[in-house]
Length: 511
Image (cartoon, rainbow, N blue to C red):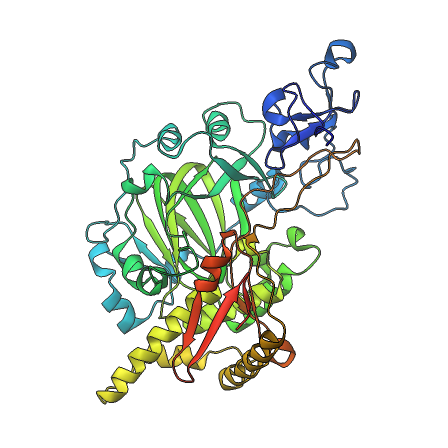
């Protein structure tokens, strides 16, 4: 068997998880970490010379900047192309604009007032600003907590996704490299970190989410301890952004509600109410080819500006469309949660994600699985209320009425039953081949082509189940990260009303 080719100064085989760059002289490939080239830096290199070749040919040649208002700064600047979101020109214009004050839609409350009981009575439909933390139940590190402390608790070798704000593109780097960048007074570009979920690190012990988010969370209340699917980690994020970081308008995944607390620094939120009209405009804007050239706040009647200063907490309800500007170096903590108060809007947002073909990486993990767990508990709750002759809470009734138009629950169950029976017959005639599930990782074949980057695989695709169109074939899909056939076969979902039992292997119904 032929030995695997060796690359880089370290003379190691190709590793799909590590960023590599090709030398334009010798055509060899090098790990960025071995030659001190970060992935986000590689896009700025026009002709790369490796450490061996730059002795004879000189240093690498960088791309020439022709503009400051386009994601591709090498485009000729003839004055005809519009400004794109995130660029330095965009940020300056945004800072100079005036917007309706967020005070028009904000609800200001003390921490002790923000309770589940209050939200169930009055609804959770408008953003809530809390400046007096006592009673909120939020526990955080002191304001002296620095980015170096984050590295200490999380680990510098952790690979993170950072956003190159001027290009609105993401890349991977080690946390230690980002901390080195953050603490350097000379920053050649604006990098933003908004996706560091730390529930599985030592830093998790330093943070407790607000009581209301903990008590309302579907994951915390309904996710079974013996679930075949791993519990989603979306409750604890650390956000570290330098001045002028910008995140374009978006709705948080799965229509989740979100809490943000600014430990130090400041963030500015541009908030848009999720009316049917605004949601339709947002979906059209999200799928348009010139999305980055259109400021979504200009497409709606009202876009509110809300400044969140140091020490304040902002809670944003389901479906609110928002963009975020970091006006000064900032560390913030936040988390996402699904809940019973806005079930209809959550489903509407999830359906929008499906229509927009949002990648799984940017969806709520196992959204459909948690919906089934919640449905089972809601059924039991409604039965108990009926037996006790008690009317159900209004928000639950409204939520049930908000099932997407294309989903017919009775028809769905009927068709699912039919397909399961069909599979039972087919299985009896031809037993399925059972094999262990493995992660689906796209690999890159090393070749001397003019590709500047080789993206690492990053985190493995999550496992999820999805009921497809029942008219075609009501079946369950799944992508399993690490699961044995034995554990997969042991995972079953029971439908008590008709005594059906779903047997899953590799995410497919086999019995």
